[in-house]
Length: 111
Image (cartoon, rainbow, N blue to C red; front, side, top):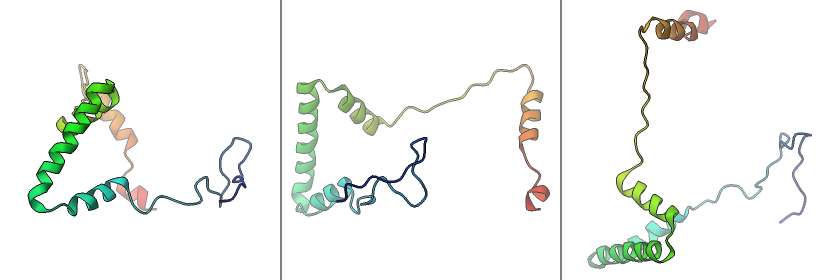
């Protein structure tokens, strides 16, 4: 590993051709390793292993009172809440005009 730092401009941004991560992105993810290991477990024992993993995870959350793990588990079980956008207006004309002004006609975008 080189101790040489990548070249940056006066704002601290990397200059073209420089990288802050010369090794690049890892070729294998942690989840890929976990999936590979679970795939090696005999079929009849796979469910027992997954139950044990969940129990250990829940035990850790309880003992450590780890709110981040609690949030992670809940979001994985139930999914993240849907984000909604509400618009209130007496008239949709203003909104339509705004959209119209932002849209580029197809013929103009071709030239």
